[in-house]
Amino acid sequence: MKDMPAIIEEIHKIKTSELGKSQHHAQEETEDQNDNIKNLEIQTSQEDVIEDQPYKLCAVCHSLGGAVMLMYVVTSRIAQKPHRLSRLVLLSPAGFHEDSNVVFSIVEKIILFVGPILAPLIPGLYIPTRFFRMLLNKLARDFHNYPALGGLVQTLMGYVVGGDSSNWVGVLGLPHYNMDDMPGVSFHVVLHLAQIKRTKRFQMYDYGSAAANMEAYGTPEPLDLGAHYGLIDIPMDLVAGQRDRVISPTMVKKHYKLMRKAGVEVSYNEFEYAHLDFTFSHREELLSYVMSRLHLAADPGKGRIKQTTVRLRRQKKVQSEIESDCGTESRGVDEEVPGEPNA
Image (tube, rainbow, N blue to C red; front, side, top):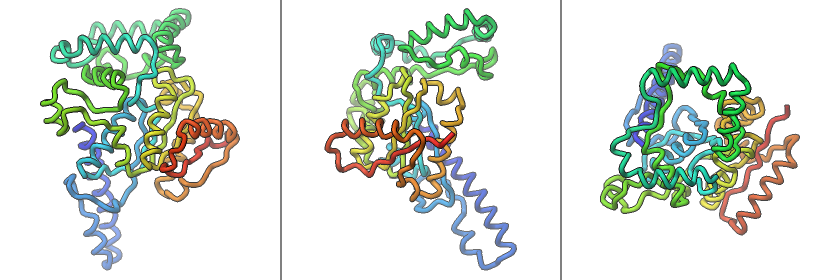
């Protein structure tokens, strides 16, 4: 969790520097702006809490990225450090995974069994050597050149992830899947997801001993992030995919219910997407929706206005289902009813 604070602070440094230069340029024409310019000097220390920063910073996150940003916001608030964010849009965010298919359950048990042994030995899961990356890249091209083969692989991948209809073969054709470089994932991230699935809680990484957890978090047990959602002080927009079998809508709704119960300003929406459709399909309806939420950061008052769309009936149905699940949770904030812009 050290990378994200460093990235955000670097963004803060750059933005305040740019805005400071802009104000300095205006000073050459108007000398009476000296006091305002001094207030926009660069502040790189995380201990300096800025009440009104001179810019709006929003984040749009998908899957594991959504879980990372939730961790960042909650832990920053616990440490009483500024997170610099104005709004979060989370597309099918990770964090809760108990509602998953049999394959994921089997993988969970295997990872938890061999994890303590393999974690010190295997830093990450990736395709080693240039030769094997070239081989996988060649297979990916064959999947595209031979539709029957590609269709078979797509069907098999769909079954592995519980019937998710994402374009798994198409993803392998992206430019960053090549023989020189290829994405990988830390083994500790996989182990962390298995721990979350087992405990049915959105929690920090369990180091395996009370002493190690005490050193990392100050408590014998890993920090329960869901129990600290009340610390979130920015608007949140949660989006689920109705055809997503990797992170089902019920798991996204669990985030929503906990946030609403904690009094967070949060909205919920659903699209007829599979898991990878949020980042791979680039559909206009999703782009329009995300931009409409980001624009609310500039004018927060508009975020409380209920929006009407051509799909209002479906949105009301989704919202009514959540209302019935929430029961008597009257402590939550007034619910937003986000919609999709007209085509």
